[in-house]
Image 1 (cartoon, helix red, strand yellow):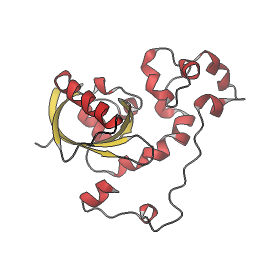
Image 2 (image 1 turned 90 degrees about the vertical axis):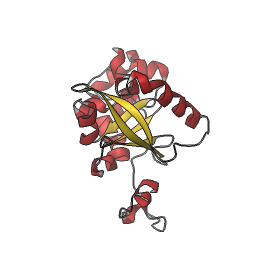
Image 3 (image 1 turned 180 degrees about the vertical axis):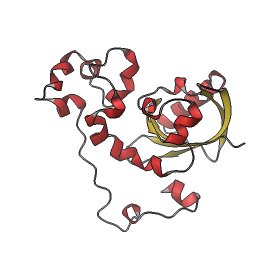
Image 4 (image 1 turned 90 degrees about the horizontal axis):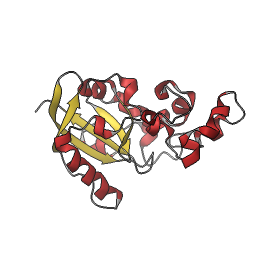
Length: 192
């Protein structure tokens, strides 16, 4: 809502505070609960996600300890997490959702900015996107926000990695989200 209002965009009726229906999102359950009783579920007991009781299973996809693969095409991800972040695909500038130093997903403009396939953004650690020269600043700001500090006001300049072009300076904006809780919308603009 803050982003839509501050950028003078139309607010969808589903998001207006007067609408008592609100958005309907499937109740959250962990991946091993989702897969329980299915053929896929037999892999869960040996998975790092189950062993550590992690909520966002896709954030450990690069560990080699995940019991399944291809998070972006996973039915659990598309039914449970994607509906909470799909609005980023309507934003005309690079946009992504992140929480706890991991991306939950991003739009095609974000993937283009980072020089990676869009499906690879799901679960990607920010260290794979943010250039080393800006990583300390970003981590410190995320830590401050997690401890209740102020959210980034206005814009800030950081460098991002691009698999094709090396590093690139961008302007970035960060907005807190109410759903998913503790997550943030980050917008970037390379036209500086």
